[in-house]
Image 1: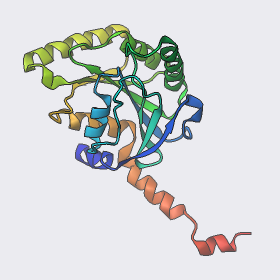
Image 2: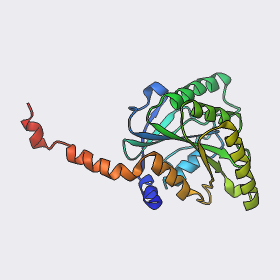
Image 3: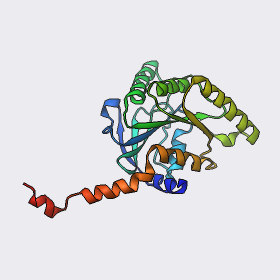
Image 4: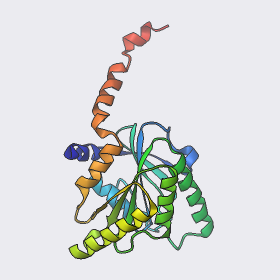
Length: 227
């Protein structure tokens, strides 16, 4: 089933960008949000899991991309959401505050949001803004899957040490979470991540939903007979 999820996730397509929470698409179906510091490798992770080189575009000036970007995973009711990067020192304080308000409102208020994928550099995991995102997730009763990105930068023993240390931090926050190692460069951790996305986006039932929608679509003849 994980393989099927990965095949479905490869069908991801850009839907729209929203500058504010109020301009997000209709709050229906299931969404999974990707969040992380501006240098955590978020765009690389999204491009790798979807098997598309330029789906999520990383800004040449980290921290400047302010849009909430939405992508459909084979159907409008299954979406990946690329949230603005945060915590970059070069961004003006007023802009940081504005982004924080929008992110908090999205994480706490969005009904279709099924889970949060939090990306954090394995060499510097769970900094201040990461913990802020986790607290917002807790406020919204939102499950979290943590990606320790750039795992290829460390040797295997150091990877395991970082994984255990981050688990302890998450336990202390009292959050429902899962966690894994991830490397976009080496394409490691794709099966595990695709399994999480597949469950949260209900991808196993997506083909049946698409078929039902097709069956319920009126034919032109049926439409002509309607008053």
